[in-house]
Length: 278
Image (cartoon, rainbow, N blue to C red; front, side):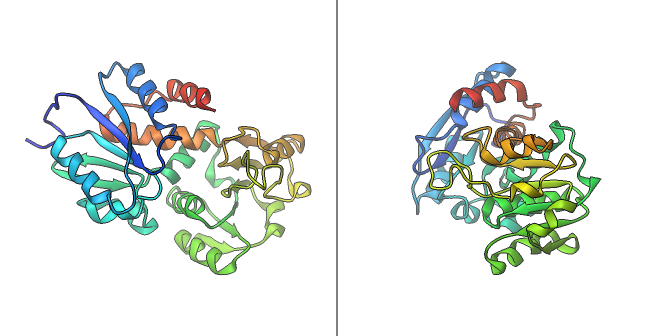
């Protein structure tokens, strides 16, 4: 009998990382368990650098149902699981660990969660080019997922050309490094940086020149605090459709929920819980 099939005394999943007190995962996941009637618990566990392997061993020994993984462990846990999904392997980052039979599998649900959030807003990725601003971890996950989902052209804009080239390589033949001059011809524009985030030096800045935005655009921002960032406010004023960062946060968690439970995630309940944490 596999660990996934054995019923533990307490069905427990958790988020691991450090610092962990700020994590919104417990509120979101507890709401999901309650909405689906699962008698599961969800914990936030402080696990620091160098402790990832021990934490994964504990998952095995205690037959926990799975982990969400946050900083600074997303790379460190890779060597502790049995295998990786293609996205986790190419991104060199794991944000979810789930059982598959006797194996613990490292997943990366960030980019797929972003694509899911676009789908919930009725965004068709084959409508035209996408401009992604940024080349960090979130941008890389989004670029990888957009390419896997069939986006016809992905243009990466970043201050460092070297980092942009590394990120755009994830898109394969449909990717290229570009500039803000590509924005007017794009269909989707994504801010995958922290510009516009509350309580930071750039909280009142916009990641894309406002004058380039128009009514034909869908503008997505991964920042979710505040929900209505300066970029999204400017995009709305220009007549563009907008997608806030809460969708990616919830949808990546929804994918983890389904991996652990085999059930369809209760997106509405999870979204409400996520809003209450802001």
